[in-house]
Amino acid sequence: MKKRLLKNTLLHLLLLLVCTAALSQDYKKYKDDSLKLSRIKVMDGKLKTTRQSEYSSLLPIKSMHAYDVRLDTSYVCFAFKARPFHWNGADVKSNKLKPAHGLAMEYTTFLSEYFHPQISDSAEGSFHCFIKKCMISEIDTLWEGKMGKKHALMRLKVELECYYKQAEDYCPALRIDSSYLIELEEIEVEKAMSYALEEMTELISLKLNSADFNRIIQRKKYTFSQLQERYANPANVHRLLSFTGFTKGIYTSFEEWKNNAPALPGNFTVREEKDNVKTLWDSHQNQVFSKDVFGFSDGSRFWIQSAGFYFPLIRIQNGFEFYGISKSLLRFTTKPYNSDGAPLGFQPMLVELFAGHKNPKYTLDALHRVDIETGEIY
Image (cartoon, rainbow, N blue to C red; front, top):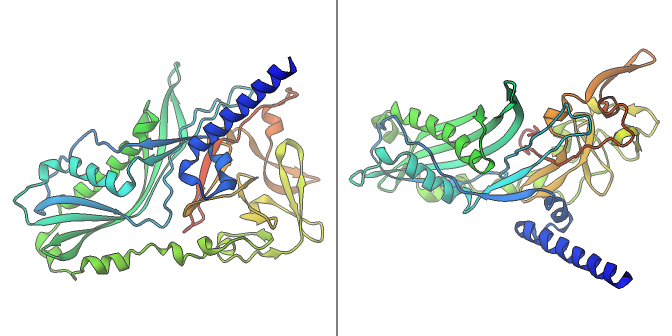
């Protein structure tokens, strides 16, 4: 009996190792992160447009091209179904999406398909888009009607600069730096990337519809080598990506984190309170409230503050991510409270949501990311 039990245990361990390795192939360099990444499904998504441009382009275009020059090279989309009214917890599912063949190649094909009616083999020029920022995240789940029909509310942040190439000259054609909210009805996770990028591409189409060809070709011209130098990946010089570790202390702002200069350096205390809540206390045993904290470093890793909780930050390629509670759940688990008449700020109160249950169950599997240029959390 003991031999059979030992054999089954070894088989389960072997299966766990195989599954973890399969899900972590793209992140072999980050041993500390691979186990955490295996908690979610990493998906290869193919960008495919469902429609074509309805607007004519005033630029004669023979071909479309895209280049990925993002500072943050991660590409994340979340899909979760939260049941905030279910007293035994929430079923949270996260998926990390990445273009199957890379963003540049996938979006080049996407552009060519979307603008197919405007592309002409007889045209002399070509259109080139340099993607500086492209972030997709699901920020909420909406419900409609008695049957609870689900809609996903997505946020797309994008920044790109496009050029019109004539002969060997690249002329600035248009620039987009925008943030969108997109509502998607009963959509498959794999298709979320394509639907979100269609909104961005439609804006490109609108701008091309009103582009002044003569004005564009009279602008300052660049060679491709000059553009390569202009968009050289700044990851090598970005301070956040150059640190091998963060100074021990409490950071009160994104600027402090970006400069590795905590406002309260040195010794402090982290107390484990009820319901997995951490509280911070300075060297004089004064509480530092979460509303005043961006994050803290315990000397070995950085913990970021989100909705009153602290989560360990994970470095993934040229980006930072962490596992937290979905926003749909957090809306029902936080409230301001006072102690002895003194306001203590905004603190999580999971015990209230799960009142009456000895063993409350909730998951921290909603994947979030930190914008290393602004400090915003998505």
